[in-house]
Every structure is written in C-alpha cells, then in structure tokens.
Image (cartoon, rainbow, N blue to C red; front, side):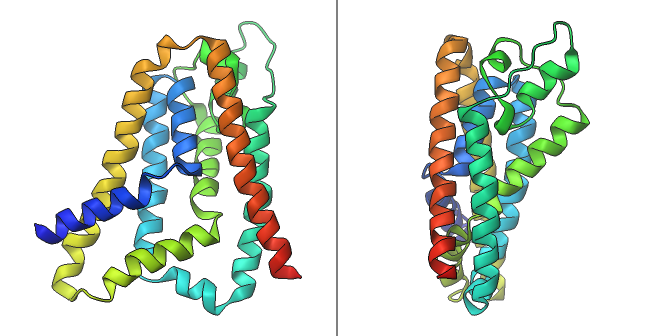
Length: 228
C-alpha cells in the first residue's frame, strides 16, 4: 500500500501542471455535454496511461539514444500542436440550421470548438467526432518529446530502485492518478460550465488555443535548433 500511495502522489505531481492534455480536457468539459466530455477524458486517460507506462520502462532513453527520432517528433508534433491551437484561436463556423452533423462537428475536437458549440453541444460525438477526438488526444499526449524524456527521468528513476514485486503497486498508483485527475477535472469543470456565457467560453477557448499554440511554437523552435 505504501508503494501504491507513493505512485499515486507521484502520478498526481506528474499530471497536475497545466499542459496540453489538461487544456484539451478543460476545453472539452466547458463546451461539450457531460457524456461527451467524459468520453474525451477516458480517451485522454488511455493515452496518458500508455505514456506513463512507456516512460516508466524507459522510452525516453530510446529518444535520447536516437536523436533523429526526437527531431522527427519535434517537427511533426510542433506542426500538429500549432494547428490544434490555431483551430481554437480561429474556430471554423458551421452555418446550417438544423444540420445535426454540422453542430456535432463543432464540439467533436478541440481544433473546431467555438462559441457555437457552447450554445448547443451535441449529444453524441459520432464516428468522425470520435476519430477527431482520438487524434487530438494522441497529439497532445505523444507529440512532445521533452515531456516524454522528463517523464522517463522522473518515473524511470523510481523504476530503477524497485524490484519485480514492487513495480506493480507503484505503477498502479501512477495509473490511478491519471484516472482520478482527468475524470475529476472533467466533472468539476463541466458542473460549472453552465455558469459561463457562450461569449466567455469563446474567450476561454481562445486563451487555451493561444497557450497550446505557444507549446507548438516551442516544439518547432526546438526542432529548428536540433536541425541546425
């Protein structure tokens, strides 16, 4: 139990700082129905659990030993993240009245979420929306090699001190932290989302988009420095 609690606290410390994952989950909780926001949170949890497991077993070391792999992820990740951020800053407007697919598309993924989505959230994501959400969740989780390397240094350092019998309770605690954090953030933010007007939510979308765009620009700068 001691190792489980240690893993839980370590996992919360690893996830809690505001990053692309948290911004994506918060944006979803503000602009989608509770059902859709929880689906988004569960998708992010799956990717985050896969990332923490990979970091625990040393995937960051693989990037450090193969600089070309880190460079590719930096370049590709920077472009994708900037696109996600700009999609929030400058959302696409869907104009057709009564077009359910158009309304659903507004809230299916962070790149296309705007004030209109806050006014009329779709009850179902739909296949296209689900795929968009999965793609965005993957991007905000995996397209940041520095986060992967930092996660490896944090979790991998603990892995090196544990024996085979201690590994399971510790990493289980880390994974539990991911579930508790993202579901908790989603439920809390979604519970108070109705208190915000569409205009306020639109501003919050743009703020989230601006921060995400800055993350992407940083990745591109790191990519340029790595190439040069």
